[in-house]
Length: 93
Image (cartoon, rainbow, N blue to C red; front, side, top):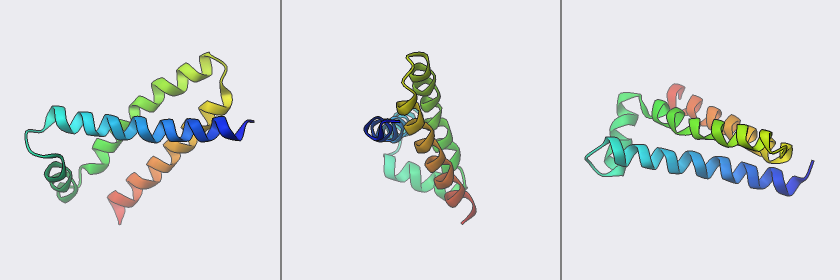
């Protein structure tokens, strides 16, 4: 496996999730982003928003598998696992 492609897939997975979370926040909330995230954190729903944002990784993962870019898809999976760990920390700690 090519380590460079894994790293690019990892960074792509993180950026896709972050941009999706920002887009969802801007689309669904009328208050500023920071206030929305603080409100969701206090309500215990920030993990749900991050989970919705991580759905974009599925599309990227399946497209990379279809194009036979296995190393890139591996990076996407690693980023998704890191996001799962982040959601666990936010929800239970």
